[in-house]
Every structure is written in C-alpha cells, then in structure tokens.
Length: 260
Ligand SMILES: Nc1ncnc2c1ncn2[C@@H]1O[C@H](COP(=O)(O)OP(=O)(O)O)[C@@H](O)[C@H]1O
Ligand SMILES: [Mg+2]
Image (tube, rainbow, N blue to C red; front, top):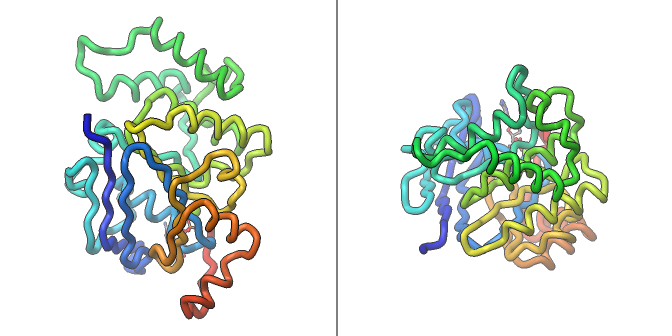
C-alpha cells in the first residue's frame, strides 16, 4: 500500500483581501509527524482552515495535493472522506446532535451501504477509545461540544481522531487548555495512531506536547511561511529561547501579533 501524502507548494491564502499565507510549503508522508510552531497571528490556523476548505479563506495561488489529487478541486466533505482530518483550535458546539451520533455518521460517511459500522461494533470501539482517553461515558450522549470545557473539547477531538482513523490529520493547538495529565492522555491517543499509514501535522504554540509525542520534523512558521526546519532539538531551543533569535537570524523586523 502506498503511504498517504499531503504536499503543499507555495501556498498563498487571503482573508478579506489581506494576505496571510505567503508561500507556505510542506510535504507530509505516512509515518511522519511534523510539528508546526510559530508566534500567534502568523497564519497557523489559517493554514489548517484553508487546507480543509473553509469558505472564508481564499486560496490565491499555490498548490496542495492529497495522495496526488488536487485538494482545492475537492469538496469539503470529499476531503474528509478521502481521509483528511482537522482538529480545530476552537471546535464548534452543535446543539441537538449527540456526540455518539455525530461520530458514527462521520465514520459511515465514507462507507458503502452494505459496509456501515454496526451499532455493536461502534459501541465496542467508542467504549474502548473513551477508556484510553479517560473520557466519561456520559459524553457519548451529550450534544457535540455543548457545555464542554476547553480541555474536554480537545479530548473529544482526539476521540474523533481515534474513531475515524484518518490517513492524515492536522491538529490545531490540540494541547491548549490541557493540564499535564490530560496532555499525556492526548499524546497517548495520538501515539497509538503512529504507523506508516498515518501522517500528522501538529500545530502548536508550545513545545510541551512534544515532550510526549516526538516529532520527526519541526518547522517554524513566521509571516505566513516556514522560515526554519529541523528536528526535535529545534522545538527544545524555541522553548528555551523563544522566537527572537530566529527573527534576528533572518532579519525579520517585527512579527505582527494578531489574535491567536
Ligand atoms: N476570519 C478572519 N477574519 C479576519 N482576519 C482573520 C481571520 N482569521 C484570522 N485572521 C487574521 O489572520 C492572521 C493569522 O491568524 P491565524 O491563522 O489564526 O494565526 P495563528 O493560528 O498562527 O495564531 C491574524 O492576523 C488574524 O487576525
Ligand atoms: Mg491558531
């Protein structure tokens, strides 16, 4: 089986005519975990939203392919059905749809009629994954993300990840709002998926999650593109020294600090 691959080249994306991504490129293959780090407002969430096809984000030039297919030619649901998964920085609350129903219909969305996940299979799997993530069973029957705390929403995103088993995941600030125990649980969940058939982009402001999930590559994003790449040691250096040394090294004047 060929490994999944996500290839992004010289991507430019604007929001309301303001260019946010300015030549972003990355290649992620199955078996690889890439960490994308960078100051607030540098375009990390914009990248995630643009790749998933959020309508507010206009791709003005550049390319993105998923397993060789032009991502921007695919409908949003097609991208998900092809195995691309996004855990959003700010997951939406959906009233009237229970968590279990939501996950089960997402699992069945890419399956043929005769091949749907049975209720028994589903229950067995969700019980197991909720156990792994230490999520209380009552969360199955609550409306999606409604009234969930920040940390509960993040754990729930990882529950969806473990249930759907996508080929490629983009996890946007999955560690924000998690205490150290929850962080370890989330890392355990992600590490369970590490095979050649799964690639992952972990977008994070902080290095601490990377203590529990060792990335193969670390990229620093500034002003809408990757300005430096390395291994896990790069994340360590950012944790100790911040981003200023990179700005100096590259002669970047001032990174505009926007909203997170
Ligand atoms: N929906 C939006 N409308 C207008 N500006 C936006 C919107 N989303 C993001 N931005 C702006 O785009 C820039 C990048 O934001 P974002 O991608 O969220 O950065 P990061 O995730 O790296 O913190 C910021 O200046 C932010 O204010
Ligand atoms: Mg963000």
